[in-house]
Image (cartoon, rainbow, N blue to C red):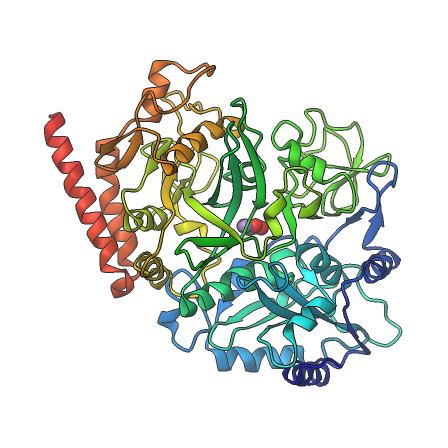
Length: 600
Ligand code: OXD
Ligand code: MN
């Protein structure tokens, strides 16, 4: 079937396990994409949108029981439980294989089995890696065409003995003869998204949605790749990558990790408010970084498209994303307008008077459920983004000058804070957290830690992953990026956001850019380097002195109160926590105590 014997053997093995009616080796061609969309349209799950509104675009409605990644059914199947760590669900690899082999037996009867060779990253890049997904879902094939590089060039790159990550997927709903089956087949009662880091394999059963089914994304590019990166000395991160250019045409590349609902895609496509500066997008979700010969970390976006959350995306929040969506898109679980287009909450200020909601029911602004599912998605090629950087597919990647970590913190954490060392930056990354709001269950202000925004995506023990970060910092001759802890979400005593965010975040990026160039001032504080008042560009912003003081305040008492919380957080990882991080915590605590005494 292919020139690659190991791949052929795997295809044969899976064919006899899953017993599909037919096997199709995907070539990634436009014709193949149209074939998938035609078959999805024929079964009624996809609907072509009005070509005058949204050319070559489709609306897909999933089963209401299959609408998001399911972390409770996501497993890391390492040989030892401790290697998965306390933040992952662990399962014994042999038991999981046995259980899944039972579920996969005959699971593709009545269906076509698609073999999808794909590259994460530009084909041939030394930073890229190859996977092959076997799936019985035409929706997965079409989505993989957009989100990854699929086809012949990948098989050529693989040659006769290249490495690939086998990614096995089934919706888990075989067809009886004559049965056409559900429009959106899935099997939520038998859901497993299983990762085998030692053998670098993924087995996913029972869901057709997003990260559960498009196995190149979270499963490969983060969970399996993070384990590969640990073994091979590189970094696989849940980060955006942007290119920032100053008015003189100098540019730098910045990567940033933010937990969900912190505006990562918006930052990746930001339109700066400060004159003469521009932001271009290299990636919005995942970043793979390897050392170049010059000791710098070079990054690629391993993906080829955006699988973005639609609700909340509008011309005012992210005009670049909106323009990216002009055509050639798959929309999943958004609402449908009467003229054959799409709509979601946040797309416009006023909702249309009538819609068909994501479940296919009539909807008006008086309805008490949202028109689009809150996790409704757009799938679109990154090449369509008007802000995409020319070099986004550069085989050698782009050199990263700065790494940002950020969460949603109403208090304590200032607008921006530069780590004084890689180790301190790793410490900042390990304590990234977002505060629960009044609307969420649990105490207000309670912190949900999401280290490096990797909580659901780290393929091994989180504490070992921190050690890997420390080790990266000790690489001989490394010219490491500077690390920053940012917080766009600081609130005042009335609970109002102090910082305007969005395009104004460019002001913080400007300071970071100038710091990397050795031109901007900072003050040394117990928590790191903060901008001096003059170094941060507040020109034209309507901020009171109080607001500026809040944004740049080193909240000694607030940080002191956090020390025991960090300590108990670390304790759940036992002896795996790198001593270097306990040391950072200890030294931070000492500096804060000293500052508290001075203030008193
Ligand atoms: C995503 C996520 O879908 O982080 O990118 O959940
Ligand atoms: Mn993500």
